[in-house]
Length: 108
Length: 108
Image (tube, rainbow over all chains, first blue to last red):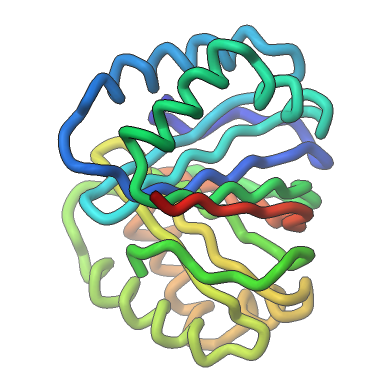
């Protein structure tokens, strides 16, 4: 989860999820791990990258189509997590769905 | 830098920069701050969000056009920072240029 994702050549899709957490864990950590495991089993899932510091969390997940993103959003277990996100875990969040048009990498 | 960016209605562009740092600061912190200040002065810049933990850093900057992104990449001071990034600060990084097609936010 915390390494860079090895995505294919563009085009593909990125869901940029930016969040500010509430205080305390409240079961967030274990649910976040479970969601990553579940995402890896979804059709069209290409990878995920995540970083969090004291101010902000950013998770970017990569998908091969808008349909795959829609299916993930509607996954029943994920829907329960989304509900808990709104009532317990997040003060604020933004979701941005974007189409990756160009990508390059550097390695020392 | 560490708050969520207040971007306009889509479409607009997101540059997703994911990195793994080398050990030590080596002047990175002050240069990173300077780059954010400079980006805010660039034409077409819409905002930036950044999070870093021990494994990964993710910075997403938002722009109104591909031309604005190109101009930023070619900015002379930014180019010096890019060089230092390759020789000193980053073990690995990925840059993904994407077009934001849809966005929504939640606030508790």
